[in-house]
Each structure stands twice: as C-alpha cells, then as structure tokens.
Image: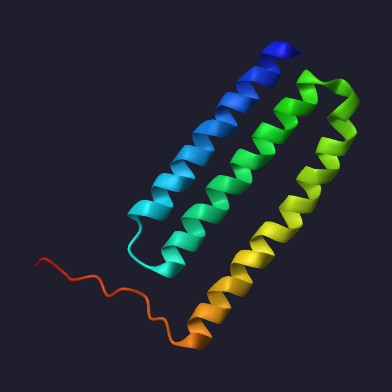
Length: 98
C-alpha cells in the first residue's frame, strides 16, 4: 500500500511539473488554460489518492476531494476561457512556414 501511495505521489508531482511547464510554454490564454487544467487535475488526483493510500484514515476524505475537483476544475477553466473570449482575447495566429 505504501509503495502505491509513493508512486501516485511521484506521478502527481510529475503532472504538476508538466502542467507548470505547459503554462509557461504555451502561446496564448486558451492553450495555457488547457495545459494547466488537464495536467493539474490529473496531478492533484494522483497526489491526493497517494496521500489517501499512505494514510488510510484519510482515504474517504481524499476520494470526496478528488470527486469535487473532477467536477469543478473543468467548469472553472471553461468559465475562464469564456470570459477571455468575451473580453476580446484572440487566440494567437500561427504562421505557416511554407
């Protein structure tokens, strides 16, 4: 049980790193939202379940938190993208190198 918990915490940390890198590297708001939301959702879920496995008394609470994040994180990123679009933020135009 401890090994699985530590593996999930490591996987979650890697997802957080990739999400941060994606936010830093993506060209516009919409791509940054997508990169940050997907990676951090998976990272948070892995990390929280890993903590729940390491401390079984917290497992039920961790599962409830994971379900809450699974519902709210995509909705919040959608609302942020909609607000940016209504505010007039345009996606970056990619140039063709042809």
